[in-house]
Image (tube, rainbow, N blue to C red):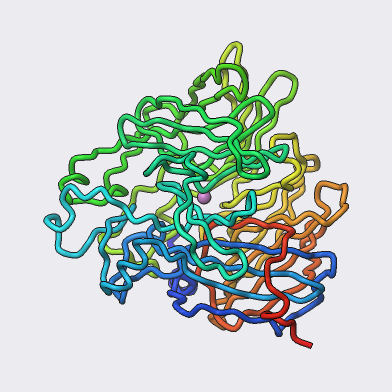
Length: 491
Ligand code: CO
């Protein structure tokens, strides 16, 4: 059946609305939110930090991929039933130099400098965009980017203090990924160094940010590791079958993104590293698939389980120049929620598709990290049948199989849902989901607070005075950093 013109028009206006949500936000705000629908629960006290590219241009020169946009931190403080908003760009070295020059000075994941291959040849010095996540740990606030060191920020003002080598733990250029996991009050993170050959280093930090563990492992082939998982006994990584054809990149003809080659004939490797003893490494192979983000992992009856957002293939359709409004979601595979069961002896991997609707940004109650959980929260497509932008928040109850969906379609676009536990709550889903929603109808964003036990119970919507571009990841801390004298609440 041919797709009707009306359906095509509807799709194209949806993509345009979504692309509008990437418009740069160059203003840095600092205010108490005064347009509030509903009531902010008084026991919801703390700060939600979120990171993402604030701008996809440098002085109107377009960059080539959202992964390369300069990191802009949002801090939303919840205090005594009120909420305060602040946003600020991370003053990375690259940001400061490019702002001063008024042009793109660095290559990125999908960005080339102007001037063709001659301007790019042999330049492998990427800009640390500090744009992927932000987390408060050990009395430090870090803006994180997987290719380099974190940037330390002042949690009250969001001012940039500088790159942080974690008291000498990170050598110069030692990457520290943007997907740490926290288990039993330990901060676990990793970094992958090099293109080929590569080495994987794992870090465990205590609650003060001091080193508990650090060990490195050589990797075979090319691993594009964005996220990790952890259980009581294992670190888990998923290595998808990529090759990098590096010569066109080194010669300046292509971006590194254009040199990625996904080989569906090759297996995806699941790397298990023991958290104890000699940190032995084992590899389990399974059919090829791709995914950026994992949910949670756990051990049960001698087996290891994890869930991940996966697709059968990697989207390799690329535009010559980034034009988000012209992207067709039909060209990209759905990200589905898959659950994996790993057996070590004999080595077997089986998976099942849990949710086939397109989804992203899976999260669980932080107290259940590494343990068998019942609930998963995600951003999701509005349609269960077709791929599209993320317009809903989904709660999956794995025990009953029940899915609850809170949708902001047709004009709304929902970011990562961050689970905030209710203080002294004991049930796994006792808490709130907080997410930034971009509303194309008003070209403004709002912060939504949903009751995680029943997503249809919208606790509050906090309307911002402007839009916040679509972002990546954030984290919650129960700490409040605003100085009451300088940031008096509205009376
Ligand atoms: Co990510």
